[in-house]
Length: 177
Image (cartoon, rainbow, N blue to C red; front, side, top):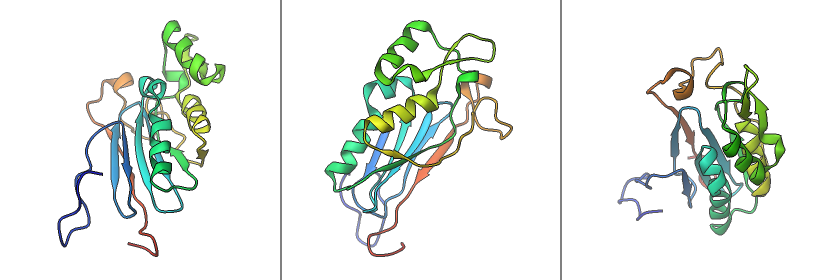
């Protein structure tokens, strides 16, 4: 966390990045995505994180880092929920990069695109990253940003310039905010 809130306020700027962590309850977080995976993490203590996870971020350990940051700030257990992201049927992926992701998260991340080409199963990669970080996955939004009937932004499918926002907030310890 950067600084302390000014007197009489309850929010302040925390910073930017692929993983934002609030070390006190009652702080709101947001990440923007198009096809990458937005992940909300939370603990019973009211600590929270918002994670933007593309395949490169997953390989660099953004999920594990966010979970570790929550634990280092007092989280006794961490749960995570995945938001809308691109799915394998719409995510053709180069063989070398797919091999790298599979080496880190297992062959369950390998999929096939609608046309039969190799593809990355991003939700499976996120599930593996969460499990590897000791995070229990809870139901989220199982929707493909590329082909869902709901009009999500997709840079890969339509070169959309807009982004989705994942908002994460927590209750203050001792009661609602």
